[in-house]
Image (cartoon, rainbow, N blue to C red; front, side):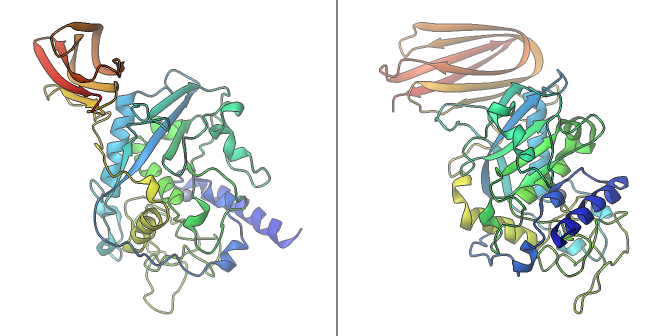
Length: 415
Ligand SMILES: [Zn+2]
């Protein structure tokens, strides 16, 4: 057995060792190229540390094998909100973070926004759907460079990504088997300055989430999604290449460690460091145990990768959270987004109301001619694309009747 396969076997063994803990089912380690760690020294020094909010254009691809797996737009919207809260260090449980690390909790100021236009420029709610061709898609495997890609390939039964330079693609699909969970995030190669860290250099970047995590894990799997997004944006597990103190995650302010930690507040210190020695950070988002925090060094790394190396992924004009907004509790206001506006004749209506009712929508031109009527029975949410003749520039009006509520929107076409 050569050294590489010895290491790979060790990795496989380790992956079984950690399953009894709060393992999010992340199989990232199974894709690591051991030799790559000898090339790594540190993450890229950031040239973009201005502390502003940035917005990542995101698309969710849902592959469903069961009706339950075809999760609703509103649930996806809630999950996106949860992700954005967590990455902003909001709604986290600091009591789960070891006192040695609490002062390092950092707001990344990154927003993951469902895309409003698809690669062809057409309106979208940032969610695609397809009945899965397989009951379960394969997860990462050392010996097969295509196993991670089946879920990402139309011809193999998955969904081919949108332009990965411009969209963060997240797939939600039934993975591996009924008894095993598989989630993984793949970074763009350039996100690791020392060269590829994965055993296969041409993997499609993005995040793959097992539907089991969305349906059955706490917080609809949002903490695990943040972990996998961390991988997709270039972060490693705090133990880096597992089972050794020789290599870690290349981040200075995460203690070097060997393995996923045990309990959240565990005092384990698996690697003694010559300076600034601290207990392992079991509550780091990139660990397995508690997934509550990112450090300043981790935030610097992912912001630098976005701002310096992949700015095309970022939105400059955005209406984050308006595309499909969080399901409002009963009694709160109607939410209505119509975009783009102005437009060239094609636009999208996303409408949500707190309670079920019949909804009637009328579209008028500027002189009051009724162009189109749509009825929706007993609904809370409407996501519908509209089109008017592009050569008829001007102002249009949409009137939405729902129960005793009337909402009027003005649309400008051809400007
Ligand atoms: Zn992981």
